[in-house]
Image 1 (cartoon, rainbow, N blue to C red):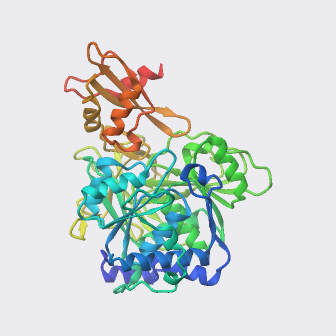
Image 2: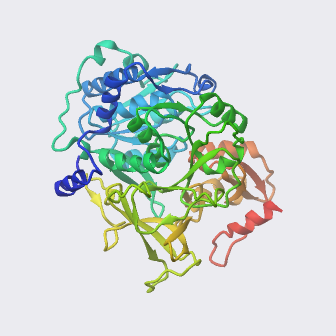
Image 3: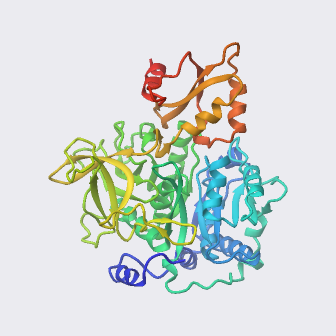
Length: 553
């Protein structure tokens, strides 16, 4: 499936921004050049939270697993451009599944580990997915069971594949298939028409301003342009050793982690965050040359005094919060994720090492001194009706972008583009607000997602439907979700409830109820508290800041 026109593709190739080789063939070239060098290393504690022993695999082994899985999926009748949902943690298995989809000409739909219940079914339906790839266990969660149950209600899903021990009935096990030497020596029977790298590689889920789920299509070439920006701006060297705890399926993992690793033919040290101490210890053990991590965890970093600055990329979820001062010994780049549309990478100024660099308005090349053709262009759109100017320091604009690293619209069910998110100048309206902080340098700081009743991380939360489902419990008269600042996660979600007369507060009973209505994991409250009354406006809107203040006191 190709969603850009041929003239655009040839122009981008001539400018050196795109190529002719898809991502899985870049992996094959790495395996041919560096067959015995380590490609991926699991977190040593993987068995504790995933139930499977950690693995260290070379480029040759990774290539053989990718080839075996791609041949197997094709043999079952999955055809080019069929969509495959991938819900796996940051392990070797994810990378095998992702690149196997690319090799078989399938479109991967990687999703957050928090997606479940109604949201997962909606995504499967919107993507018209033919298959799901998941695993037995992630900490206390059982995604394999959830995927099987969701597939049972979705007539378009033909297969549910699984990695791990003790898979539930109905799932097709992949661990032995991935290691099948005979399959690894065969070729998946697909034909990539026209330019292979122009085909859609992934569909990425994102919530639109009205709370609906949309899918962002991205070709192999658009991913390569996205990754090159980070590779250049963060000065990631060839054969880099990169340590990341980012979930690899979202923009914050695919763009700044997988692509630099693949393009540099490096080693990727995989992490899964369980605690601050575990993260710091794992980071120290890897001896990485570059670390990619959420900006909210910056306060956990240790000072370095070995005389060489460690490359550090901090991932910001669509907003620049007030950062904690970083210890010495790091060469810092800020990666601002603009939903699933794109990301912008900026190196920190030497005279302001503790502050994220403002995002540029205009051309973004990926290297301030490279003189390259822009990978993307950015612009501001005033939010005030009828206004054509953006005021300094007012936070009254939406951040927009276009260019070779940006899709030209969302995906529609007919296999085309929904251009409702594109303005008259061809810029994508990202749904991210911004504050103009410098007229002379045309710099802005993003202020977060504009839509939603409030925001958790970079996900706009449209809470009303979830609150109604929660309040349907027999003991509740009313319920409201609200967020509070958290030193590690940035925000934590909490739930305030009002009991019906004569009913007693039972937190475990309410949590069981929340599990039964299958809310997404990011909507599972860290605490539940009974209060006398939910603060609301005259029209019934929850005054969430009042709840945050009440429980922060």
